[in-house]
Image (cartoon, rainbow, N blue to C red):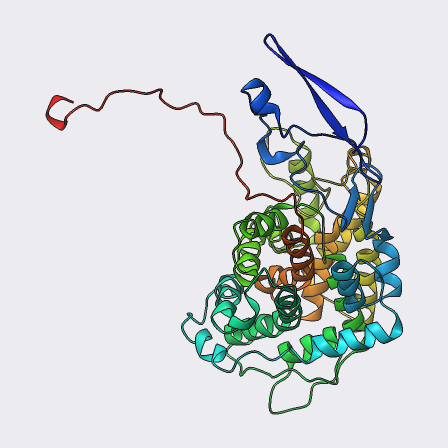
Length: 429
């Protein structure tokens, strides 16, 4: 706790509030005693100026385009490590030694299968159900199958639940995909790495062997790393809020998936591809650019700029490279959507309108193009985001449970409804 204070004056009441400093980032005014001292709350729609917790996991500097996990730059983690190494880092706070990494990989791999009765659970959904709707139900249902890891007061059970979530999420996601396209489920294989295993579960069929393309597997692994955690975003805050009630970890992650589904959050890359489809062909781009520049037109170019990053999204730099590696590897030609995407990218990086406003292509833009090229339908984009973000949610949930200062979430409000009034009998109204 720093010795600095901030003074707040409300009417005739003046109160000094402690100012806390983190290792990096802006100072935080601790207003925990504001209501007791002044009778007033703060008003902060969207909590844009409010720190709801103390965390050691992820740091973002949106102005400078910085994203750190446990102090390590996202660029280094994505270019030099793999997803399970990032998972270990987020969960345990340090990069693993070779022995620790081998043991962690083994433990995750041995948890990839789900209870066989889960396959019957899927049959209750319509075939054309959105995979995210299926995921919300399926992940929440895990609590009905794994009773031995729902006691959040037991550190061992918390870790078992964490491992199960990281391991089983790709299996459930692949099952949601297979069910949607009407193909049989494919069981995981323990001799494959995390991304390769997921690709095989999604795209293999019983009648022929599936060959893993290492370029595609590495690209998917990188996508998972880039989406592993992103500080106190909407879905992570939802997981923490649900967890603050003492809910089991599977229910908390299901809540996070529901929040992620929104088009303003995890659904952004799906919406981006829908926009590219709306544009349709390269020759139609100028009219959509003109609409985007028109203040009176509600149309917005999706996949450009970011709510947090006022500079270039550091994840987009890596995703840009990965995207072009995948397109080159697959040799995709004559795809109108990708032609539109590449032309939009060129315009955004060279047009003064976009440069002045720092509307650079973001991670959703490049990941959407990449996932489409790999063969995933747009309905699966947010599901893959959920697979990646599960470790971040779990790490944040674990940190919250183990924080002695954490309280049940209870935001306040500014009430603007009717004041107290008397009930009037029906006949007299």
